[in-house]
Length: 463
Ligand code: UDX
Ligand code: UDX
Image 1 (cartoon, rainbow, N blue to C red):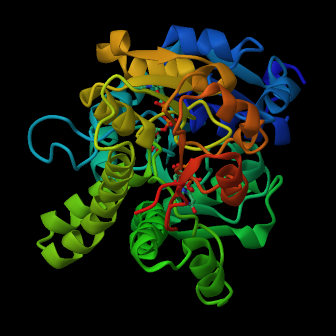
Image 2: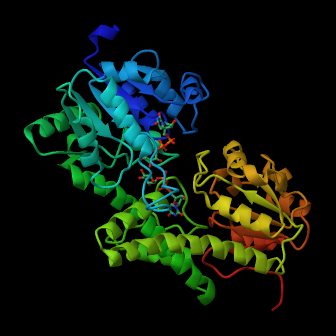
Image 3: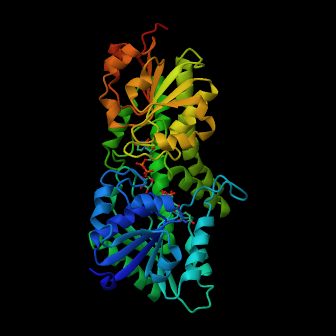
């Protein structure tokens, strides 16, 4: 298809974890549209044009390769592409604000607003603007005000189309989403724009999975979905603490309650804590919004989900220190996994960051191992790099260590030769399984003192 015969020009601003994979999927499924992804970061754009994509996501390269150069393009020429676009997805980051009013809670919308102003300046025709980034509810109203401040007579329709993909499974989540949510103003113009976005997804998503709503419901649903998911993890993690005291097993409890179809079995894995760029940020955002409307009980209720997660991370380190005879000073401790979850190199808000820092504060010699996340870990720990070390090979990381802590549920850690690892470690050897992925009976038999989440420890010591 020659460029002039494309049915639509679609642009995405922000080539990150959300924008990149989403646009690659639209391009792969819709050869009739020209998709361009722009970003202010030239290194990111350059990487999207190679076989070394800037993010690690299983199956993504194949999808990108299907469309790259055909109808999927990456560029840093933001203004030119804004001008050409019929539809603009905005997927720039909206981190938690670190300064001023709402610091530590609300979203920092400076990139958003800047992007809106770029769109306004470069546009000379009507456009549909799609909010892909997660935003506080009612952001669309602010966006409309900025965009409609133009004196060129251009009309912009704002659509909310939050992304629900999870990292590590992004390709499948995009290929076969539980639902796609598209919110708009319910005016004639708004409904027409909504339909245009429905038509894009209808190229591969069954129509009954494409949900439409008013724009505020759509914006809010994204925050609420993440809050509910995180709440389940905090709920089971709170119970894990109780299990450790009562000889109940959190896995058994989770299984027993999960069989109730009203509760459901997913997202009930107790862990060292949830991480990722979304959960904490989105809950704090919800908290801030509730507070700003004077709904303090609502705010407090949701804030507790984040507090419980912090408690779980702190508790994990405290358990380690207590088990290691109340001191980890000079002890070599191997961390198996640094990414916030398996199958991603992403370390944003990873529990491993807090745990590493805490152990370093206690003067432990921390050795970090991870199959994908070492480069990001080095950035996260830039200020304490001289106090930690990195070793991709878990066998070498564990050599002469006092303890291993499993922080990411990578499959690779399930199948290591723990007998060999035990032999190379200092004794008594400890293993702290922050993801409950290891066979604890076997490890105990090998000789390890085993600490799991939500189960009493298996130790070779007499009380
Ligand atoms: C982020 C948030 O994490 C998510 O909650 C939100 O819904 C969307 O934005 P993600 O794609 O994971 O999602 O962020 P990131 O990987 O940081 O990508 C954002 C990209 O936007 C970066 O590549 C950044 O360079 C780019 N950007 C940022 C611009 O192109 N212009 C800007 O003004 C700011
Ligand atoms: C999440 C949402 O799932 C996704 O819909 C949204 O678009 C973005 O935020 P993501 O952060 O990529 O996706 O990963 P997710 O699989 O939800 O895991 C988040 C964290 O929770 C990880 O640290 C994970 O290890 C942890 N987790 C998950 C648990 O501790 N226990 C569980 O049972 C499930």
